[in-house]
Amino acid sequence: MSKILVTGGRGAVARGLSSLLAAHGVPHRLASREPDKPGTVHCDLSDPATFPGALGGVRSVFLYAEASAIDAFVKEAVSAGVEHVVLLSSSSVLAPDASDSPLAASHLTVERALLASPLRTTLLRPGSFASNALSWAWSLKSGRPVHLPYPGSYCDPVHETDLAEAAFAVLTDPSLGGRAYTLTGPQTLTFAAQLAILGEAIGRPIPFEPVSREQWKSEVDGYIPGPYAEALLDYWAATDGLPVDLTDAVEQLTGHAPRTFATWSADHAEAFRSQN
Image (cartoon, one colour):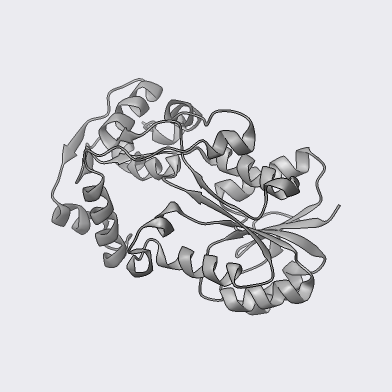
């Protein structure tokens, strides 16, 4: 069977996909910008010098959306004989202003480069990663309320395991490839509702405080660049009190309903518990 290259080897989706491929005996190569375990090859998606070694003998690629050297990656992939690329993109590319959004622009650039190439391209466009909730862990562990500029903003948290299973499906079943899939969780939840569910998983209520846009921006300064922070705030404002649309794409690809945020919370409860 043709070898599959899995990029982003330190990410949760790539690790989950690699485990699935290994469990099913599918030959693959895990690649990372910073290889951290034996057998992982060096592939920095911003450094074309690392592409030939990673792509040799590969027929399919699971690709993270790094735009800086995508044209060089596409050229090398075509030269290496790659036939199919599965891109972990984002549903943010579907917004009317995607080209101008810091959150969407890089994904859109990669999508367009792949679609303009001879490579068969499958687009996985998740909405909100359930793992975004990990950004609250520091507050919980330190005993401080979570600061939310828009507690009533809705999202569609999707479990990283469902994303890995969806990627596995489109990489191993040719009939599923060559399309775009918008992947969501099974529920549209506000941030406040997510914190309530997470609190049940860790066995104690999680307090939160509404804060202004300016206060939240100042708190994340140094972690989230200003344009990205503004784009996030604008998105949360747009979905404040407005449930987002859900899809059946996860079930279509995996054969089961998407995992709930309660399941994700139980799976990751230790990340939120105080070490005291």
